[in-house]
Length: 342
Length: 238
Image (cartoon, rainbow over all chains, first blue to last red):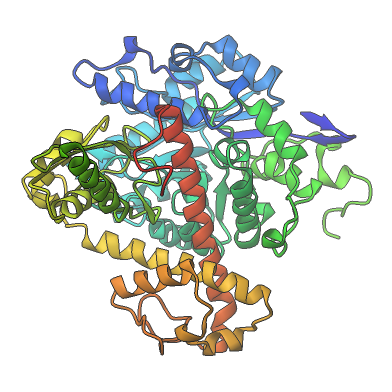
């Protein structure tokens, strides 16, 4: 929980990681990719305030204690959602797997939500693994990388029939939240891997599922916005937006937030720190303090109020993940605010 | 004498590189700081080294930039050979070899790519047209032009500006109407003019497209600066 000027903010970090990208986890023969990947992530950290930068050694592998301090003790986060990234071609134990996350999280009950993953190209075996993960970890969400290269296949689409089997399984297993990574990726080489039209189809055909497009489709924010505005169950995941722009490019940050408020709306935007790329502390505090500069070029964007910030920083994700929010952090607890149903 | 000659050639090479754009950011590779080094021998052998913000920048765009740089430099008078080398990139070897051999994208990435990059380039030119539309229209709207007036405006009637020249060039590149009589506002796919009631949404979309390009460009510059602490060749005078 974060408190500022008498306002209480319930914080859900809906997109964060616990990885090991140190040399001891690099797959022999793939060292340049394992190193290139984590170096690239480290460069993203460079977009945050200098006093929050880590050495590359620390960045490659941070400890459980580091995470608990950075995210919960210092970072104001109440509940954090682990989003796994496997990358087993490059990292022996995976970059950050559901298993690794859960093994750590079990020592901190109530703090974490364990999302898992699937890949439709894994067929029946993948479906079994998905069921197992839901049983073991109670996953209510998945993180999907549609552009991952797999046995000669150059990526897949959420609208593929094979993916629909998995989406049907998600519904059946109680998985509600489909986080889709449409951000920077490597394969396939020749297509524009950032295309979001498949999310559009799947969101229409699976109205009971929520589709959270992480990094708001960066570097294709406009395609994402034009799609999301038509789909009630498509959300904007703000990971990278706050971390990558708020400090480094404040003017563009104001514009991107304005665009998202216009096309997507404050009820469908969710905060994610992308920890360990960026620590949540400066992002949460900075976002609560943030005000649009109010220049002419920003004047016709919707205004972001304290209520909107509360929704984005935690209440929207709490709704998606059925997280109980303390009464004092709920919007209807604020003086003069609307009561439910009014 | 030789020094003057090579200095002149080097300027010509940098000027040629300035015409090469990152298709995604619609900005020159020199002003983005992507030109790490540029040298020309007295015999006219040009050597250019390019760098990108990350090791994993999309290889399709990287390929286009290296290939375009090769074409632009090779076409110069006085240049006997052009060697363009992309550095510090996971696909550098394949891209550099492919461009040097004039192999095209599909042959360079044998078995991993199924289409040449023409369509990709077209898609991004269309985005550039939308972003440029916002640049040109924003001052007109601020000066009080309403949707109907904008829909009727011809290119020749728009006050001259760098942004306008650029917009017309991008439209011409795509084969869209770019002459004096062409409407300022067009559908970027069909090239036809817009009815009045389509103008507000069109302008909204144009602005979002521009915001996206600017935000990406900001992130790319930040990442590049983190990776390299030296300015690119030709970056400051772009």
